Amino acid sequence: MDRTRFQDPRFMKWAFAVKKRDGFQCCICHLTDVELNAHHMDGWEGFPKERYALKNGVTLCAAHHEHFHESYGWGENTRVQFDEYFETCRLLRKKALLDSVVRDIEEKESWEGSEGPEEKLGGDL
Image (spheres, rainbow, N blue to C red):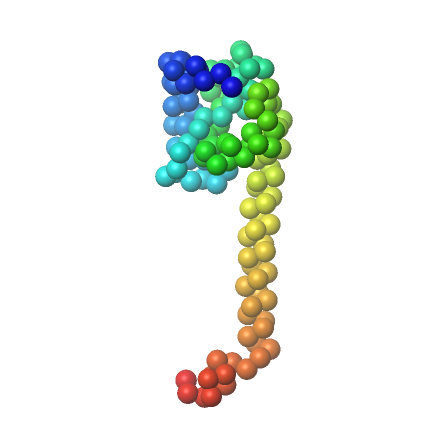
């Protein structure tokens, strides 16, 4: 990856504008008190005309930025890839929430089908 862009004033201005527009939070996990990166949805190398377009940027925490590029590579990434990644993350968050609700229901049902806390402790409550 070409690291010289990080010293390019136009890139720095673009990256700040992307983060500001996104409320200085990751668009995936919504964390704010972490390292944030301005990510090019249509990649830097493959889409030079889009390099400084605000609409081509999105704010990601360093963890999601790294994970995106581990999944799709570093280089000629596309908006289609980003949209797929974003949707996958959304579905995984939804599934994790659903799994949590199911665990809570199962735990509650296991209490209802057994002795209550009073009986387990010998009626001292």
